[in-house]
Length: 433
Image (tube, rainbow, N blue to C red; front, side, top):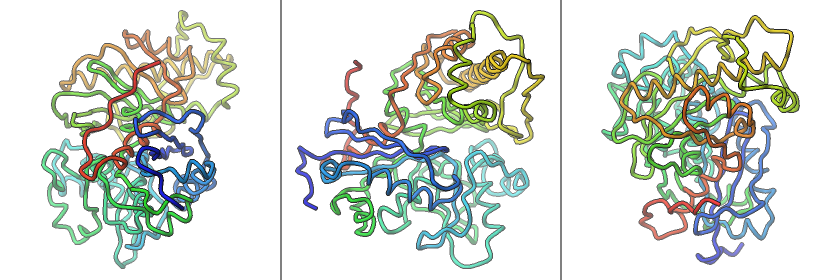
């Protein structure tokens, strides 16, 4: 396959969510290639990493050959906190532990490893999941890799690297550029990745990956980020903006002048700026426990946001919450359920709007500036009634942008692989239509 000329090259981004994966292509200016953003559900359970790889191969392979021939760089984002134990050759030793899996039995060990109050010190952190996985391992060398980093390793043909944003909850100290506490003193410290900044150019595709994907062997692999950070890149947040991603879970993000550390709160560095936020276990995953997508659309049209339901629900998918409170024992409140399905749905949406409002209040109490508006991405951004309920709860304008996706943000991040070897800042955002 002949590589594309620099002026003709495209950047490819792939977003790995909890229910499936999505792909986007952009040109060298960071502009989306119309009609070529596509999605695919996982063919295997989310915790099976082979399903991630097979989905990547199938989704990229669905692109027309003339577009695949032009791909000069690729970047991936994944669910922050989904952790895998694998051999040095990348083969999985067990199913992955997903981002919302708390491990409260590790609380005592966490205190001995990392400072209290850091994101890695929580029972819902990647470090807590790492300790559980290590306890279950029967011997032999192993690596700890998050979803996006494991897939990045497959692209490169080695699993040396980990991207900084994906590893904060494992114990990476972003400000200090090191692993927190006594992590490097542990007998399993060799399992930790070498951490690189998001957007780093890491090398060209491994020949096996290039063949499987149908991409040029010269295609550059660019270190990705978390799914929520990729959404920020897609949305193009301005000062005073907040971002909410309404997917399977509920994610809040905003830029700040300095990092904030607190249980359940993450501080990332993105495009030379500090980005803070948190992720609630609440979200679309709860809604799908009760309703299909068609039912959600039909019932939502029956909701009158000006008339409160009177319900006081705490819509969590099960025990445990990460943000705005970090409480692995918090219980959902999903009843009493009224006879009217539309009223029940309204109560669930109101409960999620209240969780979102408490999330922004928590960030502000920790020192983040007040937000002037909220930009919304994800499947929930297609629901106008939910937007009105959220706007009432938040007291600021809420703008839905369902056409933007984390895949687009990852594609724009991949653009760094199309430029000169020393990279540079992210491309400026194209003007809004």
